[in-house]
Image 1 (cartoon, rainbow, N blue to C red):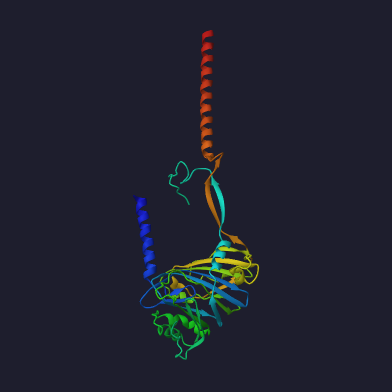
Image 2: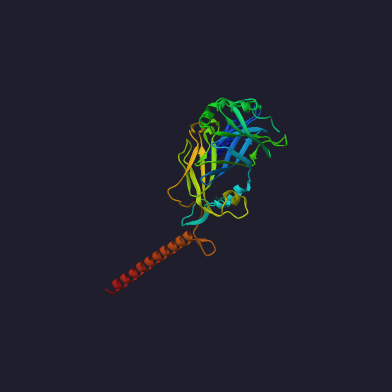
Length: 369
């Protein structure tokens, strides 16, 4: 009964979490503000990005996994320099997933555990869009491109309200705090990539993995914009692959959980494949990081990554636990227990025989007196 109650409670919590991610709009993702129109909702379940940095130029290939019922959405990303934007190749993520898969090893144990005989259950238990803000002098339109389902505008702004007005003039409801959160970027004279996600098929709902975008700009430091994630209403999750000359690490946690390194090491992309084109050379150091932001409002800066003291390689190891067996799967513990029982039995028999011989000898001695 207790186990059943725990399972029901877990299922209820999971269901509540999933419904909350669909009902509550995520106004921010890991690197910028994403908003849906006022009649629908969109939630960013996961953001996965690949960052390539050679000390002078930074490229970000990003892909969003979204949920909700929105057919249109908009997204803003601040960038420190003038950026170029093009469609990316989603095959890169598959290549990186294969390169960073954990090493699988088998580890044996002597005594049976849950799932081993005789405790096994026998059931296989086991492990075309409106022009952006052309009438507002505080907003400069650097470029405008249609990339697949994306309408991309590259903007400059001298007034944080100008960016907010640009989106609102295109029919999107924005959080009131957007202008406040953009102010630090305005002060630093950053520019902005504004994207409308508008599928060519008007009935298409934005759901699942969106096509990745590839954004390039000059930068003498490796920075991943994150500050606008403070606007998110739901917990955020960031997966970051970093391609550089050395192993890289975030300079700080910026208000999230401690970044977890899931892979670090030199990799050689397969020639002719999308990852090789992005890496720009045959061998590159790959660092894979995962970070969660349970309370996005605590994010206080952008991610700035730096080289670690040493290029120490790392790969996760996943162990498969197996019961120690011999000869066709016979558990060693069973043989050991059987041998111990036999030895104990033999010892008892030997003791009985000694006692019997002793009694016989005593009888013979008594008879001879």
